[in-house]
Length: 113
Image (cartoon, rainbow, N blue to C red; front, side, top):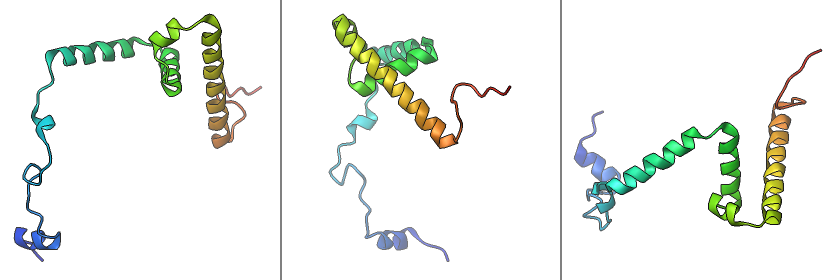
């Protein structure tokens, strides 16, 4: 059976409006990103790619805690220690969860003697 466009239109309720004719603002799709935003995105991506896996993990944990690197650096030593402890606990929990899911004793090494 071949479906014509008129048949398809009637099957889906006769929707034939384009997004803009339906009253949706689609201007964001047509706008070109500014040179500044492109440069900033490249710089941010480059900085991220230069990070070690441990640094990427730490950055992700800080993000989960809702703390930026700048905020972390501005904190007192005591607050930074609390954040570091929370990050350590989060890593331990994720490692234990991964080990439990895989049924293995250890996550980082599988040593046979």
